Length: 450
Image 1 (cartoon, rainbow, N blue to C red):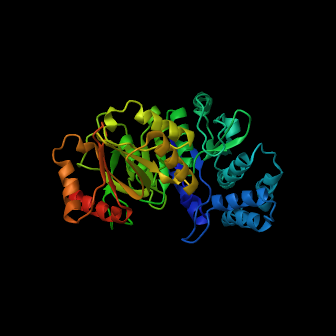
Image 2: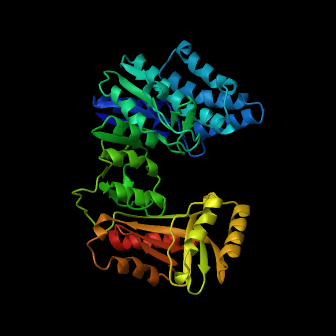
């Protein structure tokens, strides 16, 4: 059995739906189809999810939302018209969209989740209608019916363990099951969504729950590349990589596959195939367990991200101060801030954050409390910070990898502010200025792939 998930670009309009139908029909092993909401049809188009967020905000603010609803419905109606679906069959979908403001929600966050989830839900219902019109025995399966139960965090939910046993009863279905991605149902019957891009997570959960042979993730690129095509022209396509290589690269900006989505697949040891809806005959990229994996090159990829910041603390004899780090972590906990890395020396400590957690007020208050509680000799907030990740299973057994990474940067006068290598020895992290990040990726890529 294969679980197949289609991204927003794959389901953006009627022509893309036609490609999806061909892919589904090409392989009878594709028994569970996970849908995203319709994505962009062209560069300046608006995703349906973004329109639904606007619809929710207009509802919360008691504004007129008729124009927004009309724009949302036109996306689904255009797809239905492409396949000549009768208007009578579409009425329940339209009514569900219009009824969203009348539903009772316990909070604004749950209202937002309920609105957002309907991008995927309506698309799954529409795909089911199209398949049925073609005499393909398809069935829409809502998370409530399937037993897809999640925690009660409305916008960053997690799957509950009982979901996996609930899904097992669908393993022997004769119908093609069409499942909306991105959301589940809480134990109180409320809609809660995964973080943005969470349809990948839904697909991985279904793959693990049904012990699938393969999880196919269809998107709009031919493969996962060794570097960002916006930085490197025509980068090397990765044919096969491990779960942990993808996790490391996703952390630093690889956006083809949702980084959290791989966890259920890891737990179930389900291989993942990332493929292109527009070129389904291409092999794409296989993502597999580490066991018995034979790397084909020293590094698999290099990625960068500029959404980081760093807090630098200097205090003489810091390494001898018992409880220093504990006090620091307690302050982070108070402000609900998570840190990414904490490289340190005998007198110095740098804490790296995802700066999207902060606004200016939180940053100032947190730094003030650190100054008062720990009295460092120097405390500096570094906002101009980028992370470069160099990742590869082949790095473990190679001598001189660090030299091959850092020498090209030195020759181009690119300063490195931090170097960190994990215990797994499959990744090396560098800290640079944001302005230097793209140039650093280029130099490292060309050193290893040219």
